[in-house]
Amino acid sequence: MKKTSILLVFLALFFPLLSQAQALPKVSIPSFDLGLKVGANFEKLNGQTWDGGYKAGFLGGVFAGLRYHKVGVQIEGLFSQTHYQTTGSQLYTVYKGAPSLFNGAIDSTKQGNFRASYFNIPVLFEYKLIPMLWLQIGPQYSGIVSVKDENDFVKDAKGLFKSGTVSGVVGLELKLPLHLNAGARYVLGFSSLNATDVSGAWQQRTLQLHIGWTFL
Image (cartoon, rainbow, N blue to C red):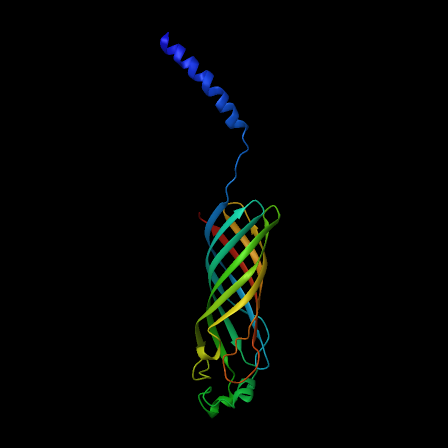
């Protein structure tokens, strides 16, 4: 009987506190995700000596995102490859005034073909437009990893291009069921890639398509 009385007193004191706790508004916390993505990189280099068509390459890497209601931020580390091609012998014609650039006189008959690899770090601010569809916009830093000179055209293929550039990114991403996502982006280079002593702007433009999977 004594134990029953103690229990009734405890419930009488605890019940009002429980009722007040249930009446308090629920506090939501930001959601965090971590995942992998892979896709295609369609890039072109605008300039007097370059073929301006889009050329396909590989894209892949990791991403981490933090979101709260309709806003968020996503940071990525992406490895990408692209193909730069000169328009016939135009590169030699324009830059023959830089003798340290080319391997020899025979280069005047060659076409330059370069396979460039980059490590990209986009920092994207996100806004939910409609359920599952997010707008992404922000800056991207790209550091050149390697350049393969397929025709042995120049003495230092990697030195032909600036080691690091900054771009602007805008795109859309779908947050799909089953921890999947898919998106498309346009990347606009803000600075010239030209690292030679001869003046001339080489402007980079990129279209990207990707799919991803969130595992955390």
